[in-house]
Image 1: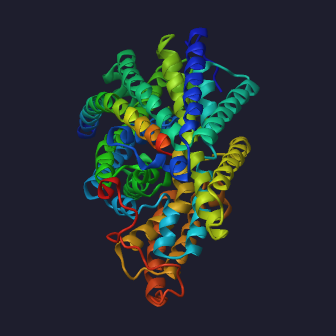
Image 2: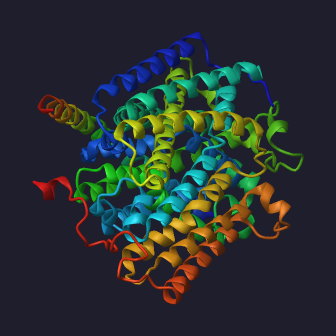
Image 3: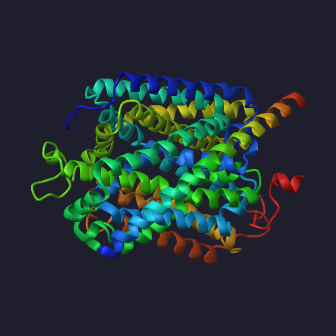
Length: 48
Length: 528
């Protein structure tokens, strides 16, 4: 039981930290992607 | 059902109302960008990597996922973490290899049944589309019930009529903006939800550990579940080897590469390289969407086990968790209502309610699109105009929404919500997995084999609690039935294809098979 208990504690903390990093990166980066998406759709509408 | 004093106050209701109004407003505003079915279903195939990751995680990290995962944590302890690890590792492997999703994106299809027609026949597409929509709608049938239990637990609302009104209003709002905005509105609202929920849930985990103490959490799980609360390989844990195999298939491969709502994100990606990146980056999201709620379920177990006033609601005299799935579902929101302070609880509650709406919008759009695009349109020889397709999709969204209201009130769960979801989904994905695997990677897969595999998948319905009992199959667990049906579908596809191969003169299909390496709709980079 000791092995599993330690394993899950390590896995949980590592995953939480990794997810925090991914969340910051994706949150900031996706804003730029949204602006690009709107620009592209706006341009297409103008061309139409 | 226990009635606890909750920290959810007027300020929190205000936060929820403002958040909901803003989300719906953004969703409705996106209607201006919808021009055709491509915009409506896959946002014009213009999602870049980071937005695709946000929308993928935002959509999959829904309130229902949070509820059923927390329930698994409550009933299974830390051993439930294996589901999360499997989901993350398998999604990462799919991202590295491109298994199923890259060839699908290369073919330029918008839905999986569309692939059925390219590879097999129009009849397979219509039949597969009907099965997919049936299983998918059944799968989301208890979303509303889970949402209602969450609202009850978190806010302290105990009047069933008030809960019903709240849930109906939320469903009506989702239907309104999904009907108007399609995939573009889904993408933007998913992004907002991703940001709020990601940080809200990390914060909640920190506060839960601070309130309960890590050693206390571990000791309580050991006291309640013993070693089976940590070791998923033990049969007594409620998991065991066959369950783990079933999870590798369902929580791992199916949820990221076969389930239509995930595949839609791959189809909406700008290029195949974006698809690979999307899956590699999303793997941590696929892991965490199970792990954080499971941990909160474990914390709820710890909190109520050590609280003599409420222990009787969740545990029997021997200290074992109650077998009532409604109670185990409600433990996590009740726990949050006790440890989160006013203001924070409003933000987390709003994030999760937005997650509830976000999952609904993705699923409503998905199943309505499948019915329009893969059942009605091919059945009418593609004579439907874009205007009619959009109108029909919107009607289907409305009809599915009404079904959800009725089914959520009527169906008696009788098993863990996660197991209900895995089994109802299996009606579709056991057959779909076989068709994708054989269709993409085996030249000799035939139309007859495809029909047989799809029909075999229907057998998965025997894993649903009430059906299982009615058929007298109580000695078999839902995971054993699911694995057996999957094997049967593979065998029938293999045998049917060898015994009844397709004639290559085109007389029994509309077009020649589209293999993974054949040119379909090119991605944007290839076009450039």
